[in-house]
Length: 149
Image (cartoon, rainbow, N blue to C red):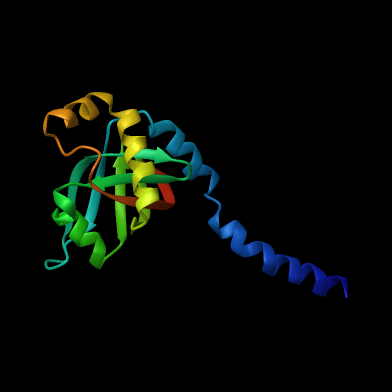
C-alpha cells in the first residue's frame, strides 16, 4: 500500500517538476540578464540551415523573451513558427530552447514593459518614430545550457 502511495505521489509531482528550470539554467540566466544582446539561431524554414542573429532580450524568471519587429515579418520569427527549437548564445553560455509566440494581449503588454524598463534609451526613441516596444513577443524556454571554455 505504501509503494502505491509513493508512486501516486511521484506521478502527481512529476509534471510540476518538469516545469521547474534546471538549476544550471537558472544560474546561467542570472549571469546573462544584464547583457544587451543574445545570439538567436533558428532553422531556416526553406533552407533547413541554421541562421544566427544578435537580438535584444530580457530574462523573465526562467525564460528569455524577445520581440520581432516589422509586425512579425522578420525571417527569424517566420523560421521559429515552422520550427520552434532554437539555440541561444550569450558569452560562454549556449542554451537550447523552445520558442512560443505570445498571443495574449495582456501578456504582450507586460513583456513590452519589461523591454522599456531594460532599454530606456530605445523606449525614448519610440516617441520619435521607432517601433521599439511594439514588436511581436516570443517566450524562449531554455531546456538546457552548456558552457564553452
